Image 1: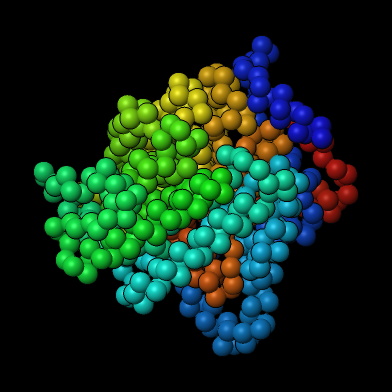
Image 2: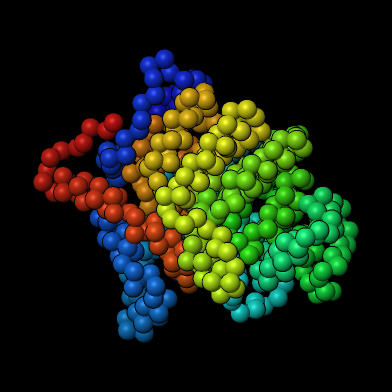
Length: 461
């Protein structure tokens, strides 16, 4: 009760007369977690920082099943990687995980671990995407059902992967057309939004009959997911993917936003993700924010550094094109800082019509966000929230949550067969994050050493 009261008071207050006090990410909030949890976290993070395990994860999993058998191999995974990064398989297991997070002042951001890789084999047609569509609807319902006291709210968030509902190959085809000089207005967000809303047949001249049919089915799936999420008061955060897909994904998101992020909807219900490691992100974000403002649309953004660095550079080399990514981590951080400043300024000007998730494991980025929120008078539990992966960066997440900020943990769930390949792909995409978790490992080691030596509970900051 005291924590909730503190949050209310903080959310109603502007800048404090006493000046801004930076949060301490020294692991002080680890006192909220059990020794077993901390031990598993340390072991798993050390394993995931080992490059051969990440590179050959799928092969090692298959080898483990052959050597140990499916049952023992599965038990080891559940006790380690799966247990660290996944909420569980059943709805009850997910609810148990979320309840534990809520006691720590953290919120859930559920993610269905299903997607289509651009270079993967062709899936089983529309039936595969329809199955994913049903899984998304169930995720919306589960996200809503996690609330202890159901009622209209804007605080329920969920991740959405567009390539689970539409072909990556179609997105590549649309992207190549969008990038052509003088691309036809037939691919405008307005036209797609009208087709979604009216249910009328849509024909795009750059696509053949089969592709047009798939586009219409994809638009219908996306529209129905957002319609259901809106009815359940669940906001959808659309994940970014590779640069050769993102223009098409942004087109689809813009069409959904035109339909569902209007001023009378209480949105934004559809958010897009912007990757700071791309050179053009700040300019695209600026244009998108200004366009939403002019149109009177609510604007939702998840700001990330980006996870496809190696793949993007490989594709650029293969095609002989300019590398779209920032040259190094420092320039990526500068890009993130500029994008963060742009969005926080937008939030301060537009209030509840503009929402931002600061999705970062970087302590300096989080400190910058909290300081600027204080300077701009943005409420702690208002239109700006923070996001980290389940099982990682807990020293930052817990400190934010205990200080009264809105903090979400990205939570995949599902069976071992579904989730382990998904986790391995995410680990391969986030190598720098995993290898950069050395500070978290050091803090975990210090806390465990303190407990073993019996120095008593740390006084939380």
